[in-house]
Length: 499
Image (cartoon, rainbow, N blue to C red; front, side, top):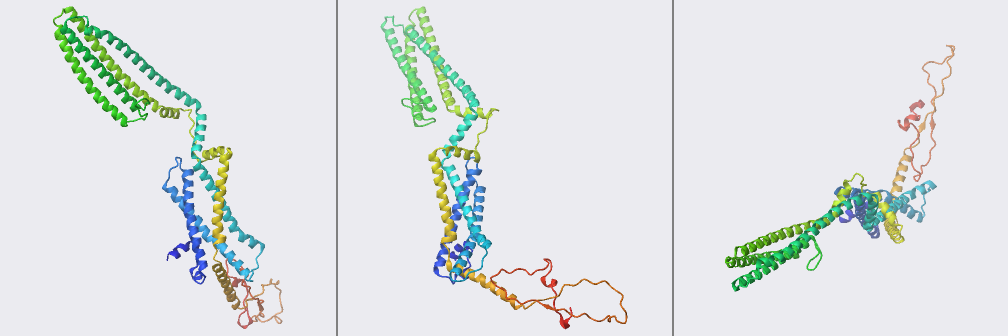
């Protein structure tokens, strides 16, 4: 059952194949496997052709795959019913000719017998060239894309330059804002270094005040270190999130392991800064308790310095946060620069659309073939696929031929023609009547010599010559009108010799 399903693609007469040797069955089985394999291969090839030629983005589509399967099936049926059947008939006639039975064939009939083979070889060459083109487009798709991008950049050079200049100005303005903030922060740090001695007041010689001042100095130093560590942790987290490169950074954009570690470092730095702030407040509270015994003027100076120092520290914290935000936005601008430039270019009315069609890719491949190495590779692919298709065609129509099966197939056809000729021969001769002659002009006759009215004219009967039909000559329709049977146009003999 499996063999019947397998060999049904070759349009085999199984009643004739049953009387053939096992070699013919093996050849037909191999031929069927070759045909099914070629069908699968052509389906994949045509589907890939449809994907490359019909899909702008090169994606697969179910309707394209179905269309490719339909085309491959039509090629399979054409191979089976037209080309392979014609080749088997020609091989059968050649086998009979080798055995001494030669049919009289005209030159036109010999040429007609070669037409299917020439057509199939031509279609194989077309398919091979199509394979080479599709393979070339697939193999050099990156180079083709670069070539298309180069043409696109050339056509839109002015628009792209203007868009890039506009976004570069925005990036430059962001960098200038960051530089201005850094200068302001540096100036406030100078103010802090000036205000701290006024708050600490190291000129006082009282031991109790010295101890309190030392505690405040230590607490402020710890608070400064904690603030510096917190600012560094925040800066590192922002740089890591933006994909900056540097010591301790992974140079990867996004929330990665090092960004999470930086976040943990921020949390610990915030806790240390909070503890340092608490210690500083305690030390300052202790110092204020000691300083309450001092003069009002000294107290006012210290309070003014503390207030100013607090304002400066608050301003520095706000500016550092603003600087971190600007740095993060700057990184996002750098990352989104190409995308925004592309959007601005496409929105410009002078924009020339990118050519993504089949003709543009073929033109790009043609330009690439100006390189001798690329052209040699494409020609090698073309030759390889030509040899592959020709070998498959030769295997179907020349190599895998069941000789005994083809001989019996032609013998059955000739026997059927011989039996039809014998049936026509046994039908006997066919009689015809002479064509009616023109009526002479009527004349007045003597009633005495005129023939009686009921007299009948003599019957004229003409027999057709008997010929022996040749079964090897193609039977033709007898002459006569197309819309009438042939017998109605020919006279027939009747009983009594009358017509």
